[in-house]
Image 1 (cartoon, rainbow, N blue to C red):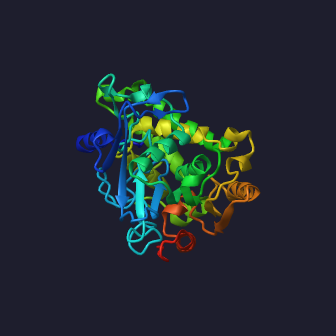
Image 2 (spheres, one colour; image 1 turned 180 degrees about the vertical axis):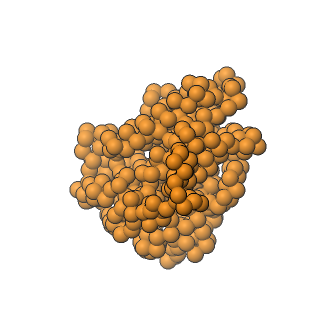
Image 3 (cartoon, rainbow, N blue to C red; image 1 turned 90 degrees about the horizontal axis):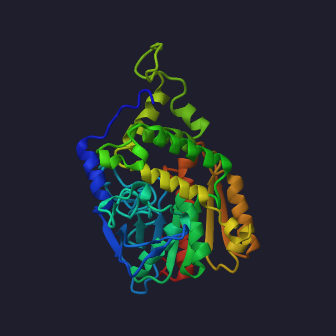
Length: 399
């Protein structure tokens, strides 16, 4: 953990802790009479879901779009983040003139169960003890996240979603929505994702979890009782994960072997190379806004995800009879969720007679390409949503 020494200021740490239970967004609260049935066999109650909306629901309630965020995302998809002060994480896709334009759609984005920005998770207070849940929080899965989202959509009075959209872990949620609630999803845009985690991806997540748990400040998940946070371990976990979001070509183009503010090596373990400095910055900035235990829970949820495994090992059975219109997008340099996994999904959808279009986008930006300015991705997303909008009868409107 050499060199990863940045510690969030007390004010930032306090704000992050406050957001866990009292988020700067809308909140749907579910009492003891509406428990969330988890795959681990526990009924979670009470619980809450924090969410943001953009645009207005039309009179027919037919223009609702649910955005599912990725592992380290949250509900602040197109507004300033309340902790970091940075712009929304998907303002490249969501906003005026973008493929998801709030003047056309009613856009919803919820923090997942297990998250740390207002939806109930390990960073939330356990009402039974008055203390932070920590590792007493039950293990959650991608299907659990989707069941909670479905309860939110019910609360909003929406029967059918015009579209469910997401990349990476968000894409997993998109696929789970179509498998679990096929009659409630008119169209689905699944980006840079897979129907299950590979052994390599599970291994990378385990590396990150062990980095967190090896931090002496972790205290078996009870770090809040000690007024501290395992920032070093979480920063290392983020650094390791961030490498998987990029590609060798992108790292070479951006950094190569260039030195950081020096001409000669220091012959030390300082950040001599620009790429080292970049990774340390990524780790340090991440701990300002994210909870370490949430990182453990959400990575584990991704590891457990396996749609085919829930349907006798036959992927096509998960989508049997589905009427949803699909668009599956992959990126050539994404080695975390390679195109071969997207093609396997498309083949399964074809086998179940689903309507599906597929695009592999040429780019060297790696897995994170769906979050960046990639014009071809925007064009494909816009065209798919416009086509689905016409079929849905949205008066020809689409981003």
